[in-house]
Length: 306
Image 1 (cartoon, rainbow, N blue to C red):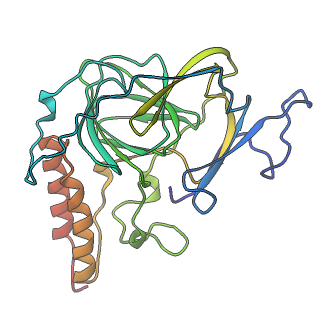
Image 2: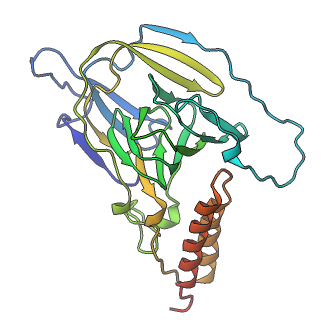
Image 3: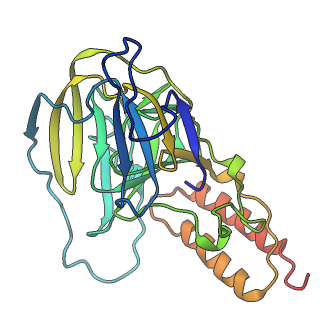
């Protein structure tokens, strides 16, 4: 994300001793980044060692079901006709994929009895239908219909829906991060006046009390097409505080704003970037119509000569 967030308890200086209330034992610092030390990162402070694992096993490999000799043509996917009962992992149906990106939908019918982590790809999760809470070690995010949830790779999370009667997600997995285009940010990273959204439109996690609980907790970890079953000796949401620029967040498509762009070249670049979103397969016709209507309205409001 483009701005700094701090939640919970953090020490005055990073990479220093941070004692628990007993004055003897230490909280465990985790420096988390997805592209090494050259990119954005966050520091998380755990009650337990975040690397602790009791047991690791690999699940049977998933069938890729790739149509390798598919003809080069246009395709229309009726995603509601392909539904699989299950949780955030087992209900996914992949429609398009390559080595860098996977597009899928999920019609969830049940809550998962495990935590999930995609260690290979970042995830953009669009809420077609449903309402609930997205939980991670960063805290809580309340979500509603038409929310985009941006999840950095390596994030441990869990979905809790208020109801599973009519839930549909559109999921994009990408090996490159989802980010705000540079032409919408100034040299300091702040969103510019001609950006179609503002920092206030992005919802960041709310702090939740750390869970200090030992036991056996199941985590499914995905790496490409391999799935590992981790048995953790403590609850993964044991973070007492964190700060940084890397975290899950939410943006709702209804928050797109009117813009003002002053030359035709910028207008063409801008509309190309926006309209490309609409072409994403997996979006229902009513969502596409709403996005197109809003984008066209924005274009009509642009004065090329002001």
